[in-house]
Amino acid sequence: MTPEKAPRQRGLVIVNKAERLIIDLAPHIDKIPKHQRYRYAIRLEDELWELVRRLIEAAMSNQKSKVYRADEQVRYLHALLRHAAERKLLGIKRVGDASKQLSEIGAMIGAWRQRLGA
Image 1 (cartoon, rainbow, N blue to C red):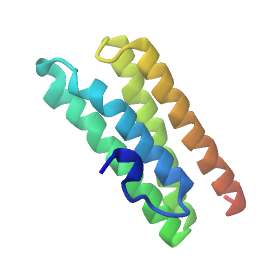
Image 2 (image 1 turned 180 degrees about the vertical axis):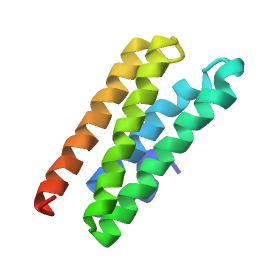
Image 3 (image 1 turned 30 degrees about the vertical axis):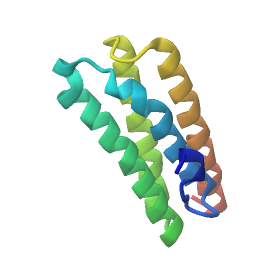
């Protein structure tokens, strides 16, 4: 089965975007040097999956606090990506593309927060 045909969360466009970010970053995360793989690469990948989990939780509960937690996770991931760029663990272009994807997710969360009156 190709990644494009893999089952996705229906109706949760924001979750699909977060999953797409993981798929896009995975080959680059795998290329991080071994001495940083367990310190940085594992943390980045875990935090990306944490974003997916938080988005699903927020969507299922529709609670303001869970939407805020998802927003916090996006901000933390931006910090991790900045760190990767500064330490040259990921290419500048790749970090820029990932940051753009994260910003899009963040904007969607912002609109979600406004709908909830947060």
